[in-house]
Amino acid sequence: MSRLGFEIPESSIFTPPLAAIARMNAAGKHRCMLLTTGDVHKDFEQWCDRNPESSTVDYVVIGDAGEKMTYDRLNAAFRAVINGAEIIALEKDRYWMAPDGLMLSAGPFVAALEFAAGTTATVMGKPSKAFFEMALRDMNLRPDQAAMIGDDIITDIAGARKTGMKAVLVRTGKFNEETLRNAVIKPTHVIDSIARLRDIL
Image (tube, rainbow, N blue to C red):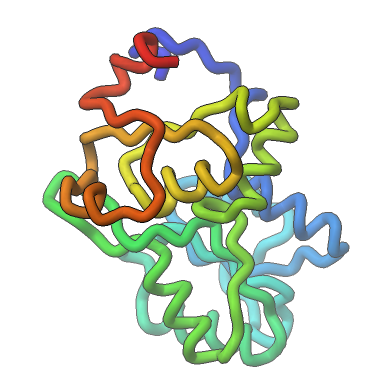
């Protein structure tokens, strides 16, 4: 973002892991199993065991685990949920755009665990209305003072519009013209590049 001219301090960044940790703190339970990728584990490392026993877990935290989402790991998560763990989804996107094409995101794996265990995940990221509301509170803003920018009509745009925010759909990444035409909830603006944000906000 800084390369595009947006200077955003780290203190202004609100993420699904922070929302999940806030929920865990409120419940007073912190033992978790992570199905995530990248450096997300750093946010949870004081509580989450990399290879916990399924019977000792309070939460199964699912993000975009990519190639780490193996059958063995998914089955361990299933056993933890059957033993009483709650599923926390850091997002519920269906897919995302990688350099070599579309790839499954966390949503399908969250749905698989929900179906197998007969339970419902708590979504702490997009498209959860609660996530957008927590982010607004963190920024001390009203919905009409904020805008969501994204390339997914369901998780980015619909989630923001249900919260009362402006929603800007960008024709990049996994944007699909047919999906936009058929969408029940429409964006406030549709742009070709985030370089146009200064013109519309």
